[in-house]
Length: 375
Image (cartoon, rainbow, N blue to C red):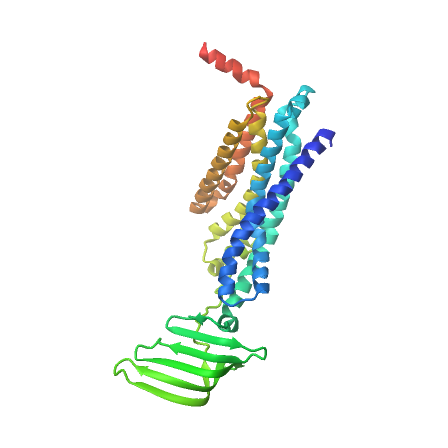
């Protein structure tokens, strides 16, 4: 590798690491805040919160890497243009295509990372995330054993615990059940214990009182008890996972769907095949994003006024390519035989890149044509 290639590649990788870290932190913190509100409100521990945020990290990185590659390419090219480094290198005989070689190599590195994420890490983390989410949803104890708060585990049910001792003893219990239209049941107890039985979790209340208020007559019946077992399994309606989602499946399974997978995911075989190809298409777009930023700015050459217009143009080109991604994906989903349309944005992006590099290599050719048209 030429010394210039190593220099430009090192600059791109350094800025890529910086932008990736910043963008990952921004996206991750935003997602972590939502997870914190959801998990802590359900009575989960901080360890569960950290586990969920770690499992969501591969999905965040998948979104961030192409953006970071584009930002690094844009920043490095702008700096080298402003410092006249690219002009000096071009004066030695380097064409625009030759200058783009280290950028292309940088894009391949990012695409390699994206392929690992899209085909291995994201499906595995998504599968683990959904399994843990189902476990937490089924974890009745964590959702109910929250002291000092009035909880509503299901409509018409209010549950309160004043304190929980280190031995697991529940102090000063209040439970109101108004799910029935005929009567409202209210239980209070000074002590209670949560035990597991073959019939599900039971709340054993000690030294308490039960009140039944009839909605028809308005009559209140009060009963005191020394101990009373209440089935709390019905307080929260939980549903087990019916099957895996398509995001959890391996790429091989997506590209070779079986009738069982179609029934499990609820998607057609064509939609699964399209999603499998889309994973590779998104990885290729990482190279296209890096190359687009470079080719658009190198087209401007050196200017004392900077290349801000080209930077804006590069951003609009990326938006245009993302629009082509949506178009290609919609066409493929409508007709699964058009699965190759998932690669449409990559083809369009590399077509734009080639044209811009060719223009930067032979600017006089287009200048003569404009002059001929004007004459």
